[in-house]
Length: 357
Image (tube, rainbow, N blue to C red; front, side, top):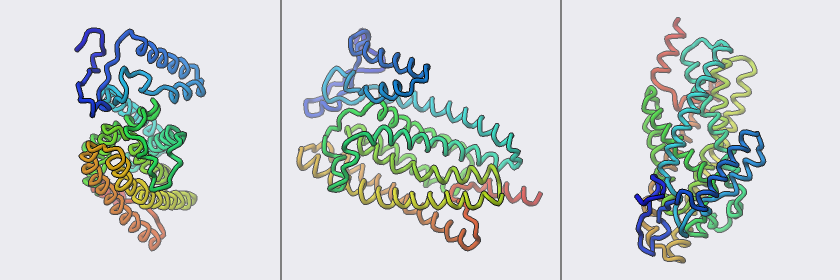
């Protein structure tokens, strides 16, 4: 630890060929530190005043390229940022869980199984909605995002990727923290029918984000996340309405419509855009742009790990699509659509007991 430097940051010696992955250390009291501190103070002041324009301009205008002391570096203290995001996600989940408990008490939901399911679905609905809007806002302003020609080659045009903005880094760290929180929550809750599939999905997503970030490929991380969240908004909203309100006359058309939007967006995002644009681009364009054109041989190791993980992720999506089709087929016959992929055995037993009572 060098005197006058941040405890959590340290300089890591690298060869010139791998200098792009050098960690940063930020001198306390230096001009760079003062600039970042001023941005944080201005951001806090704008947030307290309710100045949305000021908050957005500050969040989108500062990048980690502004605070580093060397060129071509990775963003500092990744572990600390993820830890802070994990703590924030846990606190926010707790607060929204209390809010959901208040809602079911006001509405008068008596069955404990439905109360528990509503609390869970309501939290997922809120998170996926915020994450989708946040991810689109942080990414859609980038010029490369709209250039889809040549199998989305724009994702790999610059290697290492230019430094992402604070909004993009915060988004990535929050998503990693959410999946980490999901793993702990998944292990603590009653085991569900797709327990192992969801566990593998969470771990694979975390590793994909980690590998792509360590290789300075933030763009592919952002694209993977953008195709994951939107479809789940419709599903979690439909389930929340069903568990909260019950089987009233107007509920079925609303929930069936939401489930239809979920199925269509699921197929479009996870069975069309993800495999034919993102996975295809990773398989061919990344190798051509980075290894062939720029001689980035160090990228090969990550590429050989990245592709099997992408294959596992896509296989899970195909499996879940099969389950969704079974739900649709069953719903068309029984004229009642209800997603049961994540129901637990204890939930089924609880519902049977309540029906007997």
